[in-house]
Image (cartoon, rainbow, N blue to C red; front, side):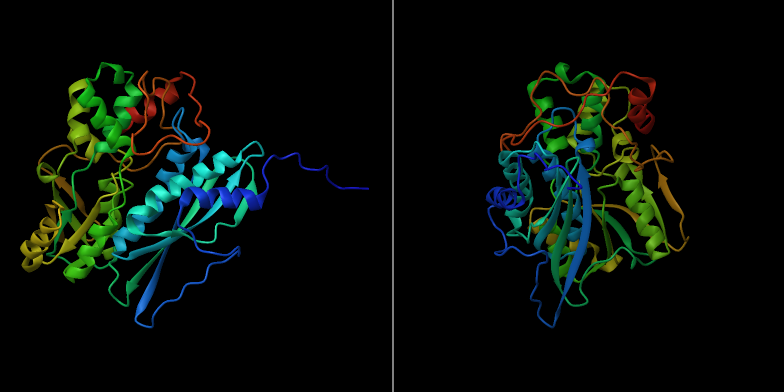
Length: 374
């Protein structure tokens, strides 16, 4: 007597892992369930994890794109610490009907994120069957006691952001609005790039850590207001932000031209943050820090100050965030999502099967994002 019927699954674990590795290009040799890191006595390991699954795919998104987005989220936390990216360990869940091409697409998505920084895929041997999803553990290495943290801001520090924000949320609003086909070619390129081509700021984080001037740092991938709240809470301080000083991504201007919302709304009332770094320095270090970043091609902006009013986060001089900024609803892709134009980037050829289910028209599905940006 047998307890289970034979699994008719197409894929087997060993060839699936090899397919992922082909896509990732660089990987750690071997076939273990753990990875072993050699760290010098004067260094520390930085670990973080995140996950994404097919329910978070936008309608028609391919496997490579979804995996790239999920890996970006984990690696962005490494950037905020100022660590060098060592690599990522992934835990893959895939349905029985996945093919080796789909697994290679997973590797391509991981490789898209790792390749610019020389990171490698660590032992990719954790595989299971079920609804498609990937959990990513990112590993960084940093000289001992130099990692930047979110819990060390001091009253009187200057609050700085590493670049323009609001692009991803503005792009999402346009794509959900049903107006994407009305955009001219240049506008469409701006929206498409803002939605798909954000990248963790590993190099910027390393530059900031090396200055020795940064007193705290956090990434903004859950929105600027949430990053401010988290930094203030972790450090036991308050923040005063000058809204008019916040740099706005080009996609916010495109959205403002086609939708009924000011461009600032997408930077303050959204659910993401383009993976920028939000950090603090003492006033005496401001000029030198901005000059160092500028020399390395990064234009950062002073947007506020740190106060001793614990937990008091104030946005002054313009649009204020709504209470639910940064709190991502269950469903963010509405029934009008996208357009007849292909939502892809030339540098990242689609790979793997299409994912994402176009939601049915309902009050709930159409209002989720409208509430955030109104």
